[in-house]
Length: 111
Length: 113
Image (tube, rainbow over the protein chains, first blue to last red):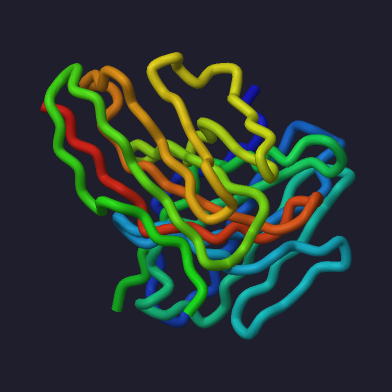
């Protein structure tokens, strides 16, 4: 079983749609959770951290479900510019600094 | 602006000809990482440094080596590139003992002929 799993998609949605991605992780000791955005042939960039209480940044909402070991990303009112790959990153605290990436979920927003 | 810089952005080499990729940062972060990313795959961690402490991932091939001569610079050496080593190589930094946000450089795209 992979440590961090994501549906690769692509998710193909019209402008204005709401779309949600999930990311499951296998290590219950995981402590830090992030969503990164990666445009085609570019480097990943932090979209948002995921906090236990959930957090929102404009049209983006991230949630953490520790019991079921997954995080989610909700994008409301999708824009063409949201088209990208969304990478889930999970890491452990303590002596290990190893962040583990999911393979990413591809989102295509069309007119 | 503080940033992570990678050189070269594109590298073409021949099968078996050594290459060195470089990464520099002005963020003064103590942790630096090297990732390999192939098309439609997750970035795969090759190495990371916490200050001068070097950590080699268990499945990183011996063909790959790294150096960090000081806080700002980090190098990735590929001793004998094979066709399977063609990929994007990403350098990243983060700060602190606990994992925080990673800042990525633009990457070096390696082609092996």
